[in-house]
Amino acid sequence: MKNGTRPWKILMIDDEPELLEVMKDVLEEQNYQVFQASNGPEGVLINEMIDPDLIILDLRMPGMDGIETLRKIRESDMVVLVVILTGYGCPDTIRDAADLEVSEYLSKPFENDDLVTVIGKLLET
Image 1 (tube, rainbow, N blue to C red):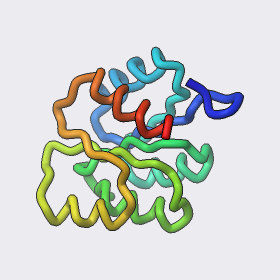
Image 2: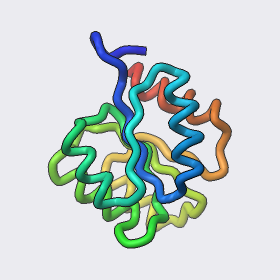
Image 3: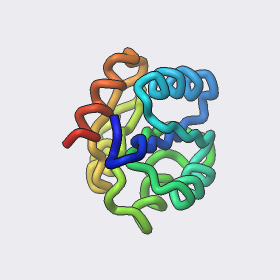
Image 4: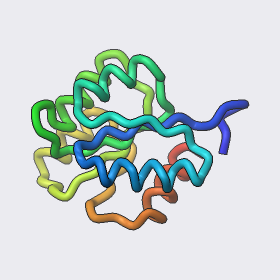
């Protein structure tokens, strides 16, 4: 899958190294270019450096959580697609995320095929 002549760039922001590695392997098999950040501040910085097409963002992270991270990203990037990962979908958090233009939600645990399907649909539209 390509965006013009280059692979789609995906930034994953999650504090679980094992999950990052699994998702990276799955997405690279689909020919996506994958970047990783293990916390919110690192994710904000990498987003500015690489200008990804899509961000996969965990809500529950120590320090700067996913909503705070997304607020920071949205200060300079209103167009990047965002998929929220959460095991904790409380209504207030979902409302906050909706206000920040989230494209899709995936509940943990999720199947690798679900992740690939959601990303494929978002990037093809």
